[in-house]
Image (cartoon, rainbow, N blue to C red; front, side, top):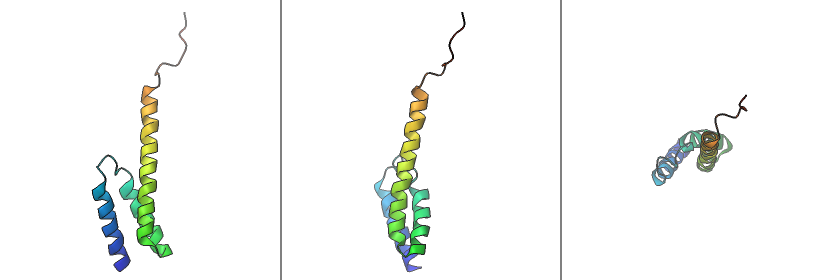
Length: 80
């Protein structure tokens, strides 16, 4: 239980340092990483790594969505 409380405190500190736009994916990743880290005996490290991976995945999907919006929507050749 002590490890869980430390991990929850570390997560709260991490979320407090990021703006809401940067925290996308951090909470979900930290929860998954914290559980996996707890099983391995390193809950805080797992939560921190999960937060980093979650943010990376969220940023990657945001970049892909932005690229799709910039792509031309009409890619079929016109028939004349």
